[in-house]
Image 1 (cartoon, rainbow, N blue to C red):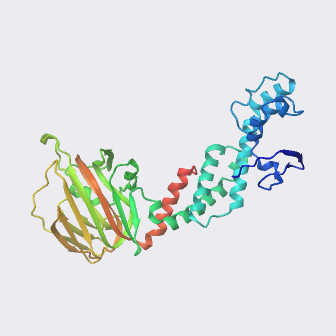
Image 2: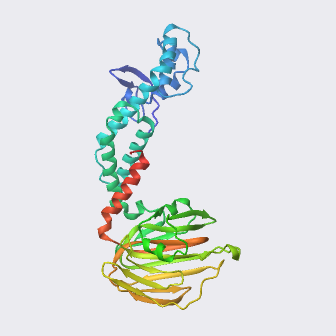
Image 3: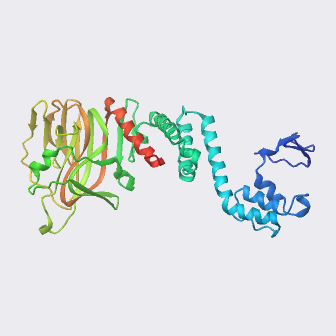
Length: 389
């Protein structure tokens, strides 16, 4: 980063020897000076010494300059041969050289132990695959590169926690509790919710008036809201254990009355991935079901339905033993956890009339048994993004 004003006295043994200067630097390895800097300065014949006319074009080509052949035209046989090689040989050769340098840097750095180093390695591997995947010695090392990427991702996940796997704004408190907020102002936030066709299958059999066999939920973003239509289950990427808080601000779109077909949804928490879970409907009515333990408790709901085009806020709060629901700040129902102490969470959607979610807050402790599963899922997704099949 220093600027040195000095005369070059000689070039010998790959070293530039300098005249006396304020910095007291007497010599510099020639290899440390960017080739392009040398070429730019040699812009006149007297600065090019005894080099042939095509030498400067050759140096520009090696430096990666697109307009390498814009210097004074040289029609010698050597210059013509250079132009022919520039079209056929040099693109592949330069690509291979760049790929080799990248692999050497990755090998010299070794397996990262810090998140910052892991990010550098992952960026280098991604660039290598995008730009030089077809280079034979890169293809031959794909398995090694994938393993290095996987080990780097383990480091990133270990230091970043859930921040590395969720698109929603999130933080992890000192006691390990996770706080995630969705404002739905970026499309990536919806990617934290995955189709889950095997979750709560009985729900669609018993609730649907028409017998829908296929489950599909359409997810769109509109003016800072996520809009859901269709019939199916959406599973969040997290798995929680013990106490939790789930707060949902929502409305059903106001449509013509003739078009309304009984829109509804259920929130499931501490689900086993099949038919056992703590469930709440939009009005806070509770159901706690565990099929293996033959446990089935439901609150008796006498409330009327919800209005279209009206904003509501539903809160579901569990303290580890009992769960309560609140609609617009008013307590609605309360129930015991029963056997359900941990599991996945998400939404069961049965909406021909669009369900519009303005905001979603999720709080809870990460299920310890789910960490390896979360890491595996996240790692596979990141490896695919890098370009590994």
